Picture 1 (cartoon, helix red, strand yellow):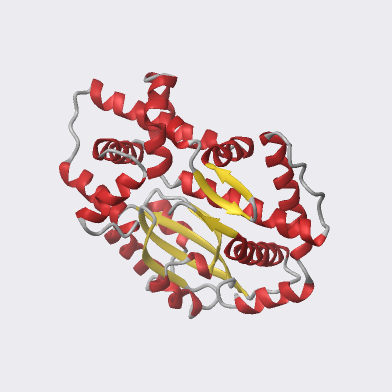
Picture 2 (picture 1 turned 45 degrees about the vertical axis):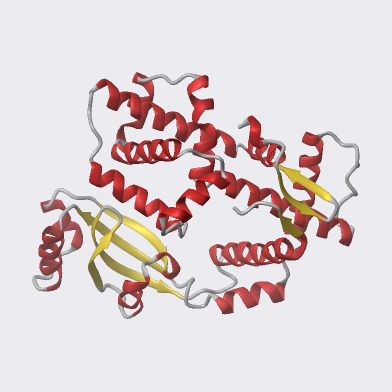
Length: 328
């Protein structure tokens, strides 16, 4: 990571921000620890694989590598090579990252045990940290987060909502001042008109469904359960008991539902069964208990409106004030 630290990432006015500023801010927020935790888990998983003398499924590894490339629009080999060169990463470091991701997903339910059994040294972490930070997208997100603080601070300073930063302030104090300005900016940009606009703009996205749902491991099981509910009039709870599956209550917003099945929820009346749906790692049946339209006097909707309003304002500040010197 040391070779990266002094590289200029972005400017806001005359202020320059480098990777060491980005990383320091991430550490102060506590976000850097999450990155290191995931890297530790991945390295421990590799050690478990090595001890068992196991081999990676070539098809699984290729699929994960292709997903990585397509998510970043690195369709051709030349584009992938250019991306690696931009971040000064070797193909070996990249594929090692893919291996760690595959194993972390494979043993997601056993990570605590794996970490306990296979300790990782700080040197091992340091050797992989750059590749993990870049390939995971954490480094880019950390840069965006600091850009949000810096641009919001400049707005707050101009509006008189926060004090001018001391030009000779130490880096930690400077980051602290940016955070203070950012929080002041957040507090000032929320207004009644903006909140009302946000609720109107998201009038469909923020429809909330109160549901009971059961998750089945196999599609045929879910289909049979749906027939028992629809045709035989059985309660979802009774069907789930027979299948030894739990029923849970869930609040879900329309924007959180896959677009291909949103209409099924919108058209469902109270008490209607929706599903089976390919959902997460199984097949779900939902019973819609209530459908609630967004209103500003709903505390949950108000929080969403506030966050959306603030994020829109921050995005404008970033677009207007931040000059990027790297391609994230």
